[in-house]
Length: 200
Image (cartoon, rainbow, N blue to C red; front, side, top):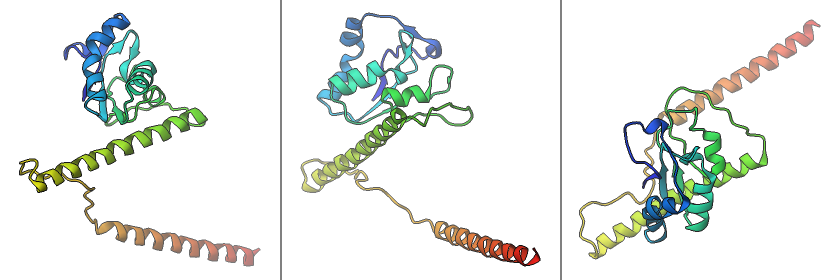
């Protein structure tokens, strides 16, 4: 579901700051999302371009970690909206705030501090969230398909309930070529070192 929260316009959304009270935020803007999480069991949420005060929603620890995950009990993954404004849409802030997927295609360079335990914890948490969301979707689809088969639901569309893995013949060929090339380089290096030793 999207976009949490304060996404009120398409025009001018890139630089939108929204200043409001916590009461207004909770009662007006967050309430539909809360219902979707608590009652509907939503497992995927897209953040918005907007900023709550001066903080981008996709990098707001107060929003993602404290309210949605902590208070509402959200289990699933947060995805950013298309992050084409890296001056404020920061992937490092996103993952540390509890976000999981940074939607960005193409150029741009990002600075991540990757050596700390805090970053490693955030990365592990993100991986867990994404796997939970994906597996939950597969289980939900399988349950839906079972209800179609039993006649409980009338629907002609069967939703994929397991990963679709298409065999790609070229992958083992490339692996074999890589292994052969590596072995060839190893043999060449061995004989080059033996020859150098004999010449010395």
